Image (cartoon, rainbow over all chains, first blue to last red; front, side, top):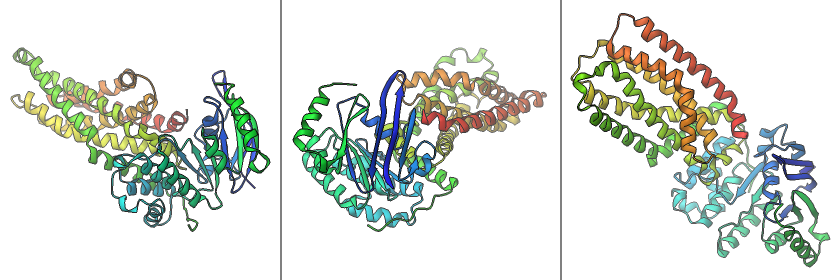
Length: 236
Length: 239
């Protein structure tokens, strides 16, 4: 079974096609990096796949579940990390994670939260308000939040935004440590980093797929050239 | 990490969790309560200045209900405009919408929280209003019954305000938009509650006509509007 599958997926805002007839299939355990210029439709595609936006037409399956027909069931399989932490600044790290754990119905939420805070190296700050955290620390709690219900597929929307190089390093190590057999789909502007992490790469421009292939079939230099040409196409 | 066992919680458990989150945040920051409380106090001071020279010629008993509801409506508006500030910050609303839950639970929890915060402010503002403007007057024994229109009106305003606050959350000039939408929607409720409150303050032989009937209509309006908001909330947050 594919972890993520898009079939002729489109999303239209007014007269503008943000995502235009996108189709691809991603095997379980893979890591897809999505590249493209600003306005190419990357974030919209991610929002449609993660049930935050309804597709105008086409079909999207996450962990075999149709995101349009059964969004609640699909959400059980989805974790989402974006440049926004989705954490309440006036709650502590522990309270934030317990909130999400209880909403998802995680059994023994306290134990799960302790395990995750240990994993992201913030157990000693669990009683501090998220408002007092640095951007890097907040993003680490955000990883814990996205994994609290143990999702099969994790979407990352420009997760490096606003992180300093050291925080990026820690973030990458954390993602690697929690990767396991999960599937990751990441939108990134950082070609070198995105390419290094992925098993599959996708280039989007003006809402359409320009290239999609397993990394094994791609040469980095050729891919970088294609990406530069695509960015040259400008805003969709 | 070992696989985690997940059992979908009941709607009531999710409601309790979301309500607890709102209450914990507010009692920690006191953002809404402080701003609403100060605003209510300032409105009372402005009333004092505005009515200082004319009070002897005014029938404050007849005006009291209306003045009190002006205070409540504008104070509530201030609080409602802030009620989704935490949800918008850092994309928290999207985090909640990613959870497999009935989105009307989000509406019910937020409405309950807003209702409680508005009640807390009223518990302080109404006695102050009485102390400054009515303590020297001969209020009717039925005065205590103003609690009923206050509860019914506040519940309706919390529900309608929560819905409209969600709609205007991402608009430009959201405070103005909220006010422009809020006042027309609560007008029937407001009219009924002002009538019932004035009747309770003055006391009258036409108790059924001017207290019970307006309250029945207000309760009906509450039920209809809360049901409409509850049903439409999923559509509103999805759009």
